[in-house]
Length: 318
Image (cartoon, rainbow, N blue to C red; front, side):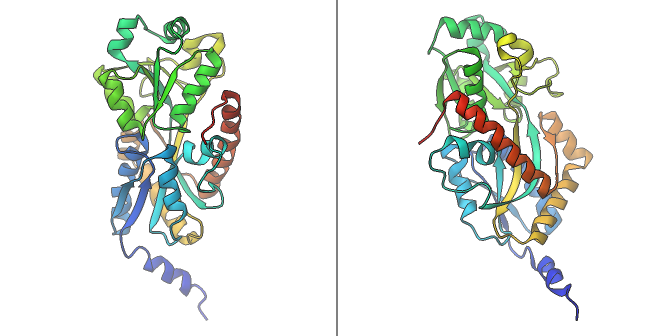
């Protein structure tokens, strides 16, 4: 008797129709950029369309809940983030999904630093050239600077909260339904500062519309080598500051292991090609493609880390 037949049949039978990748944020942000980079690669590999479906709102919770309640049949995936799977469990009193029980980790796609940035014209008008200037201005004008984010509970929000806590500054938080809409208001001059994921802001930084004050990672970004880290630029008050973001594919609980394995293999293969590496690194993203087990360990460690940040900041969302 051939016991390999059922597995072979399952592999051959999937996918027989398009696969949806849910992005729980608006178009234009890093989550969306990475999903749209991976979708055509997976479409070519599997011979079926992988379609990006933006379901923004509630700090990523709306789209994430959609996937949590979808069948585990391999036809719905989530481009999850440090917000949806590392922060929100500590930030929200009532989360409509369980980031551990309701999902199967597939693979980490990329990690990115955030970038502390201002509208360039406003920074010039305020005389702000660096992080030290920003702290001095913010302390002299408490509550007068507006801080945009991609939504409550996102890494962009929490990076700002961590900055506020460590510097003793008061910035007024304005959450948007993703980085894309927030960046539009940043460029228009309606917002003052943002701690955005680097890939989604790179174009506006290079164009000169936004001024990068610092990156939030422990080391400088190869994509912006002349921009210091927050710790470098901020002095003793910001010693140890680090707030990087990550993005990865997850599937609903119950998705067959062979499907998870096949997706992970193709993502890792694609991320390992010179063209994809160059594309992501140029935007400030560091490609990964790790195993489901490694991704699961990252999710667990990130939840523990950000739970401490949420507690220290006092940030809560009902």
